Each structure stands twice: as structure tokens, then as C-alpha cells.
Length: 349
Ligand code: NAD
Ligand code: IPM
Ligand code: MN
Image 1 (spheres, rainbow, N blue to C red):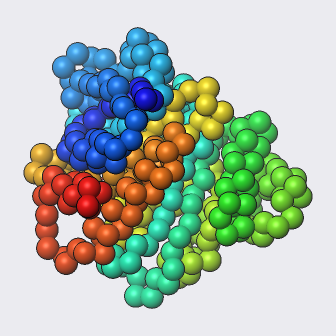
Image 2: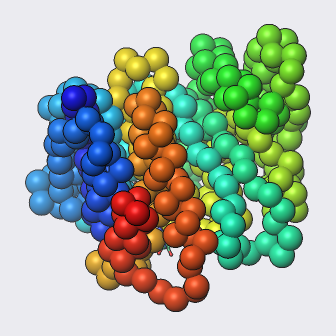
Image 3: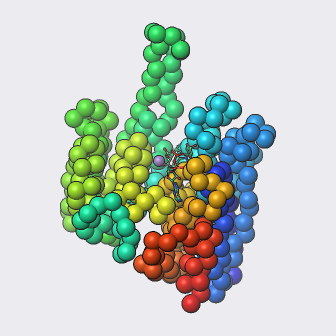
């Protein structure tokens, strides 16, 4: 039998609620197989910080890094909570994990499942994947401010882009496009961010020459938001930088039926470090603790996790059970655990 060492980070707010359902589904999906999960639970997030003052210790990081994969709910407190001012959970925990574990592919699929009510009148077929760069760009924390808090303050946030970092994520995106509908769209803002944008475009052109059967195009990020709403069916694989990818994938989640369905994987394709799977959404303090969260995004993240571990059949079964559950929705509200139970039951059927 195969033992998979899984680090579980339920996190804050609705994180523990949706992760409980994701774990349920993982167990059911692998019940008939020889796969067993050896899980370690890590109590990390705003709640842990308020208790102990720790965000992510070196020991935590070493220990998490020794697993085969990571399942994360969501971290972060109530925006504006003064007690968290100096913690910066998002940087100190989430981004630290992504950077330290070299999650250079932030994979965010968007699919409009049949029966899902979305905001678009004529959505058409929506099925694309955003390959968001995960370790560079404006997220690196390279910056600072002087004369802070005065009328003469200067605050800089430098976007770091390396040829190495861009080439590896662009290669991943082309390989993915080869396995899908053979279309790749680079999204950037080359008309203004000429230095970084120019390098992205040149690297895409170079790698494109090795993939003559992939149709390549380019959109400025502002125009991309138009097409994501007016003609999302035009997209197959989108490759973009860390910040543009963050913004586009919330929009992508919205047009495909809501953030409660959007899954993601923070992937280290080289396998040097464990990859981390999490819903795109945050800790949703406004609905936390009420069993109101939709666990589907977390459950679909386990499908990405299974797929990454080479368990394509199990991944597909989870996705199919979710599709069936979504198709059967009648607009009535169900508790978080009821949705997890319903999807588990379909898996067992
Ligand atoms: P959010 O995604 O937590 O919530 C935005 C809106 O979507 C809220 O109205 C919320 O109720 C709703 N929502 C989110 N997930 C849902 C679900 N599964 N089912 C139903 N509704 C859902 O974004 P926010 O309010 O900007 O952030 C809250 C906290 O989460 C902040 O501290 C933020 O930094 C953090 N955050 C963490 C992650 C992460 O851990 N990966 C991602 C985004 C935000
Ligand atoms: C996401 C989140 C994170 C990001 C934040 C919480 C650091 O918005 O996973 O999309 O910007 O990447
Ligand atoms: Mn985001």
C-alpha cells in the first residue's frame, strides 16, 4: 500500500469548516484503494498568532516541508483587526509557504459546470486554466517606505521578474496547453510595464517556437477583464504574473458561479517540495462558524491534489461527484457538512 504524508492546515474562519468536508471526501475517494493518508495537522493562522504570537516558525516550515502534499483551508483574520496589524498572516504564513516551497505554478482552473447559476446572461462554454506565477512579481516584498506616516512619505513595492522564473512557468503553461485545447494567452501590461512585460513577451515568443501547434495570443490585463466577462469561452490557458493572476482568478471565480467553487494548486512541478492545495477564497469572517460556506472549492482542490499525486482516476471521480452535486442543486441552502456528505455519498454510490 502507498502511504501519502499529508500536512493539513485548516486555518481560520471557514477554513476548518471546508477542510473537514475536503478530508471526508479524500477518505471516501481513496477508501477502495491501497492508498492511505498519514496526516499531520498544523494549527496556523490568525487564531494561532493571537494565542502564541507565532505566524510560521522555522520548525513548522521544516516539518510541513517533509510531507508529500499540503491541504490548506484559508488563513487570515477579520480585515482591519488591529491586533493582527503586526502579524501579516498573509505574508508571514501563506506567501512564506509558497515562496519557501518554490510553488512557482499557481494553478487555478475555471470551469462553468452545467446547472451553475452565474452572473453572465450568455456565458457560453467556460473552461480555462490560469497559470499564475507564484514566487515573483510584486509579491516578493521587495520595497519599503521612508518618512512613513508623513506628508512626504515614499512607499515602493518593487516587482521582481527573473528570466529563470518566467521561463519555467511559461514552459509549464505551454505543456498544459499541449494537453488541453492548444491555445495560450499571455496576459500582462506591456504597454506600461515595458521592462517586465517585454521580458514576459520575449520568453513566451521563444518558447512558442518550440510549440508550433499551440496558438498564442496576448492581452493587456485591462482588456483581459473585458473578455473574461464578454467572451470567457475564448480562453484555454492563460499565463500571467503573480498579481494579475490574483485579480483575474477572483473574476474567473465569479463568472463561473462564485468563489465557493474555485479551487487552486500551488505547485512545485519539480517535486523538490510538497505542493499545496487550497480554495481560492479566504477565511470569510462574515460567514465563519455558521456552516454557511460552500466546501466545493476545497473539495475540488483535493481533486487537484489527487491528480498531482498521480491518482488521476480518484481525482476524476471526485470531480464527477462534484459535477453531479452541482447539477442537482435547486437553489435551496445546505449546510457546509450537508454538501460534503452529499458529495461523499455520490462517490460511494
Ligand atoms: P474572502 O474570500 O474570505 O471573502 C469574500 C466574500 O466571499 C465574502 O462575502 C465571503 O463570505 C464569500 N465567500 C468566500 N468563500 C466562500 C465560500 N466557500 N462559500 C460561500 N461564500 C464564500 O475574502 P476577504 O473577505 O477579502 O478576506 C478575508 C480574509 O481571508 C482576509 O484576512 C484575507 O487576507 C484572507 N484571505 C486568505 C486567503 C488564503 O488563505 N488563501 C485567500 C484570500 C483571502
Ligand atoms: C489568494 C489570496 C492571497 C494572494 C493573499 C491572501 C496573500 O488572495 O490566494 O488569491 O494574493 O495570493
Ligand atoms: Mn486572491
